Length: 175
Image (cartoon, rainbow, N blue to C red):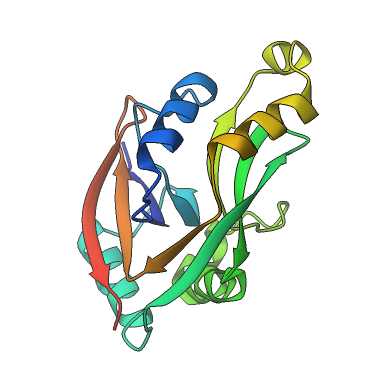
């Protein structure tokens, strides 16, 4: 069986306790993976080993410098996701996303979705979502989370395990 990978940012959050508590209520993957910003969504390469993937990402990010983002906007998505969106630094994250999908990883890009940099706070079933008042929930989350500036200085590559948990196989420091 081929391994599934993802490339992401694990932001070093000051409000990690609040984010964790929110995710424990609304995100079924809260116990499987830390809060993150996805750059390359889960993909299962046929002919790319972990070592080759790590080398590829290292090469693509060799000249990338660290940068700041701000997480501030809480939003409800049509597919029942709750996002904590970037309000600053989105362009740099978008550039990384585009850069990583160039070349070898291009066939794995999910072009049917428009990329939106964010930390997922929740993913609800349609049944659970129908029982919630969206605007009330968003207001509640806004009271729990202050806007947060975060320095992005590292990119991670994870191997997704059979139980959907995350195993980090490489961390690439930015300049």
